[in-house]
Image 1 (tube, rainbow, N blue to C red):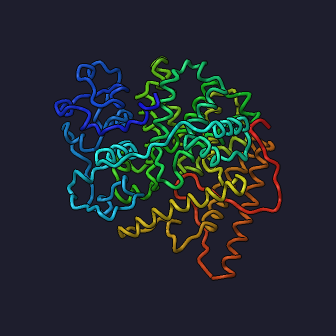
Image 2: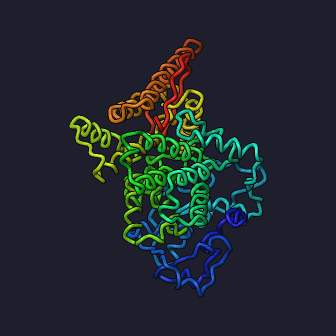
Image 3: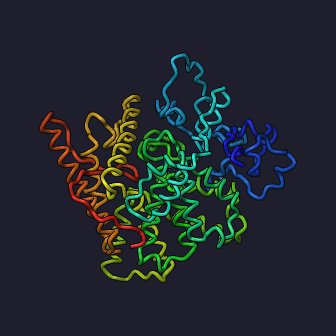
Length: 499
């Protein structure tokens, strides 16, 4: 079974005969065709799902095997109109790769410039295979000592000082798969929803694969970290006694997929470069819509929820989208004002389904940007990673004569001033309201870490400025999920999900 998951997926135009691609109607695929090569033409008409090339059917656009954008022009649709901006020659597949000394890019035809409509990561794997480059496939059989340590860590998965970096090393880079599967089993959701274990495993493997490992921050380890934090929040007494099994399942799935197929650049970057995703979603929650539709595509391709009534599975897909869309940092004030208003009026009713869903949204928002509230050694690592990703985007913008986005200029910003600004204007207001809602040991632990981390970053900045004067203007996070840290001589009691 493991060998099957390691095989890369070839692009659509290499899997499906040309006479099939020329059809104007719909194309459907089986899960086996994405693993073992070209599908049997006799089976194409028997597929349950369908892929529409109508741009109004946005969900269908994100079925995984849609292939390259050029396929849309082959079936009779005009490609998206794009400006002559120099960025359009850039491929997401090469954003974080270094060109080899012996290779040349003489072939600059438009066909070589086409972006993947869905998973850039999967296209990278397939293109490497086609070029004869051996794929670096990790060995999934670990030493018993490592697996034993990973199991010991899972016994304390509800503690706030859970070291996701260590856990990722102990699971050989499979932290998202291992953690999510463990939590689903711990809640009894696999048995309760009668989830097929093979489909579930395949779904989680594909989710982890579609996070870009080349992204310093928005990768599968970040998704695992958010999933662990989401579990801690759902274990808080006020939520633990009121959430339904469906709420918990949606919360875990949303956390695991909330940044699926993130390209490593933010929404303003996609908008100012006229990227097709920005056009598709009319510059509104571009990345979050892409994450959601990518997750729906995986759910449908694997058939994880296919045994449920159609209406139930569609409702779950919509609610999954509602949770993921809530992580849009540009809508932070809208959710925060609504949350504050509910708390001021004391009218949150956990027995109300819509109120529970809103609380799940707030919990996921907190989990997504909780890095400033982690212990210093964890928080500092996240700070460096998210800043590296910002600066990489800034370098691309400078290279192509674009206006550099806020906090993405490495010559004008430092890790410390970015994090202080992010904590002051984004994290602290949100977690202050969360503490009002859930006044527990965990909430006070998080607030304590954040205050110490913020003070420590300030001390580091003052130390640096005393050595050499430098820019220190605070910034804010242009995309969801920044991290911070701070050194401290005080020890904070560690809260947990069970407290």
